[in-house]
Amino acid sequence: MNRFAYTRPATLAEALAAGAEPGAAYLAAGTNLLDLMKGGLATPERVIDITRLPGLDRIEHLPDGSTRIGALVRNADLARDARFAKTYPAVAEALLSGASAQLRNAATTGGNVLQRTRCPYFYDAAAACNRRDPGAGCDAVGGATRLHAVLGWSEGCIATHPSDFCVPLAALDAMVEIEGAAGRREVALAAFHRLPGETPEHESELAPGELIAAVRLPPEAAGFAAHARYLKVRDRTSYAFATVSAAVGLSLDGGLIGQGRIALGGVAAKPWRASEAEALLAGQAPDPELFRRAAEAALAGAEPSGEANAFKIDLARRVVGRALALALAGTPERPTALPASVFSLSHGAAAHV
Image (cartoon, rainbow, N blue to C red):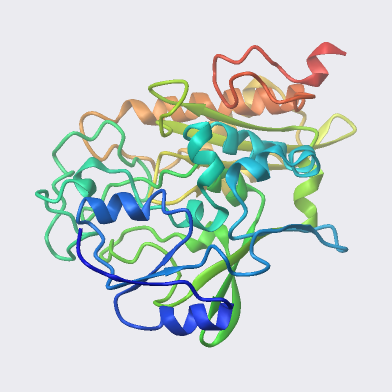
């Protein structure tokens, strides 16, 4: 590990001033940054510990019906907050399906949004990777691609974004609050992460020196609470990133779908919002055929990025269809024993009426 300077600012202004220096990196829980530093993949000259900054560790239910999640709120605390879990059950389910309990107790909201890809070629310092070394090439192309992207990829990068948390946030129109030298600005989470294109090294809309202050869910997001699920297919039921995941929310009115929300994880370099599939659901009576067509629309344009991951396209369709059926049955009255798992025995509150 390279030598670096360490500082712990007392205020947000001090943190931003330190973060504006070349080679600076912000540190919260460090569940991703420290791994990257140990592997020589991140070599900051100055590490800025923001864990003591005031006001960033709160869950705030605002008067307009929105909810603001501070960047330093721990994943475990957010998932277990009774009011939050009841209002945004798919978000809580996604959080509880991610990593181990020990990591959830440490990992933060801002860090989860900003975590780097888990592509093995990115983590292998001997492999060519355009994210680490722009212009070096991508050894994943033509390599072991089983867990790589099937949507939005380019020849420059076929990695996927690893977050569970971000998938329902994208589906629910969450906003990211960003602080920087020029003041505060907001970016929709669905637009915050970038597709690789010709510049895979630019992974998000965050500019140098900026930091995430909070994530905010709009008032409308609460309207999906009764019919919302997160479903995750993974190699192991625990401690594994998603092969494919889907967050779904339905609002029902008189037996018809008022609105539907769908986002996928594990398929692209960002949480993938399936807007065309959502449009098919609006105003329709829910049935298996409708859900099948919505699942097809959600994967429209999908292409394997290698011989080993063509299966992910059909798998993703099935995950979307299954998640829609689970959401229609109703949000479980309490968290399932295996959150987000296809092996969960819970089929929703409505199934037991």
